[in-house]
Image (cartoon, rainbow, N blue to C red; front, side, top):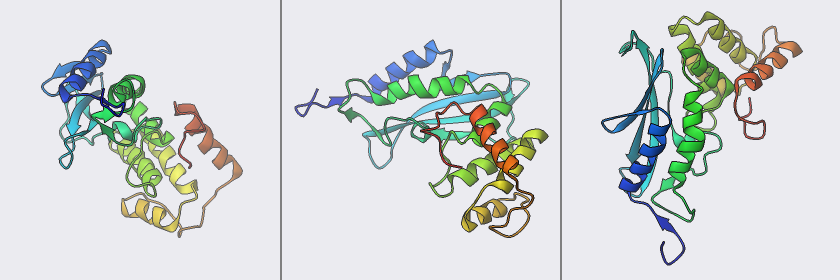
Length: 227
């Protein structure tokens, strides 16, 4: 403990603690990554250090689509994010010194990241995660349209037509700003009508959209991103 009451954790210490919690959760250590394979996906987690600041660390998370147990090099990557992108993350920036009694990076990995990845064994579950808005994507102003677009594109490429239609309906009925709607169109979503005009939108459409989010989101209403 430092004179100012802060704790300091070396990268080696954090790695050992992360190794302990990931192995206990069923991950494997492969090289510099922790890996969890399911029937459809491979999740990997990597402890990274910022190039501009050796005292700043993050957990980078990614996934690959598996075909017959092997990564499909041509498939879209279902999800790529960092630990601090998760709702409920205790830090926006994880450093090797902190006033907390225990390493926040390890605690958040154990209480937030691992339970989340355990709930995402399939491509469908990842699409539903994006639709629910439980991972930040892009800037604050572009996060929600990027979430919807990612869900739609993943569902389209993986032949999940029902989920692709749901993502498209959510994009069509949401109250986007002109810039957000233009972003979706530029990314290739087949939206109709000018910005600010909603086609065949009813009270039922809005209720169904919100019910869908609440059905699949593990995040409480107080922490959920606005639609």
